[in-house]
Length: 223
Image (cartoon, rainbow, N blue to C red; front, side, top):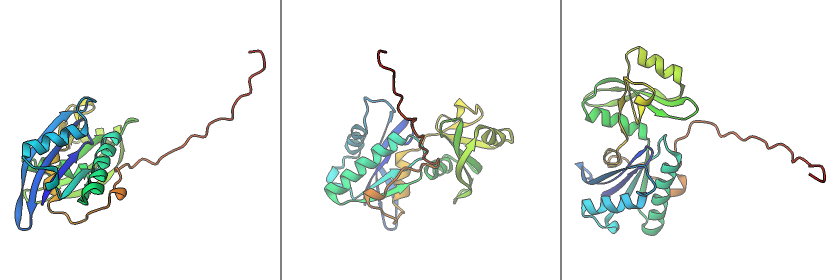
């Protein structure tokens, strides 16, 4: 199975082609990264990843999408590409948490013990999840939730390792790590919970709120 993985949830977007099959360890055939700027759009990353992997688009049988949390616009862009691909070629789709992706990357880099994944949620809040990482497993010990700056700072002061995109902007002792499409693709190789394109949604924990507009003012004549 050839998997095209799209991880657009952070400022460092990436795309990768991974080959995985029953009983075989997944292999990354091609992987590209780009800074989050309008000149390097999602489809350009896809084309670059396919070229590096020397794989034709018709050979892709599954798309893996990083669902965040993170950049809502970036995640929506990845989902739109996946939806269009499924309509055109009837490929399998699988959505994976970008937090899970970061935890596995930390494990791959040799990080062991308690790790806190921290992602900016705007409004002085953060997405926070805790993992216990061992050589053979990544186990979630604190479910993903919205946390205040003060809550994350308490973790930092207690000596906890904070990992995430741009985490050092707020917590200087943290370690910057961006979710990577190659890791996403390797995770997807072991998944069977495929989805239809219309069922894919970004991970977004904050409740949507609507503010009722005030009634229109009637201006006096002559103004």
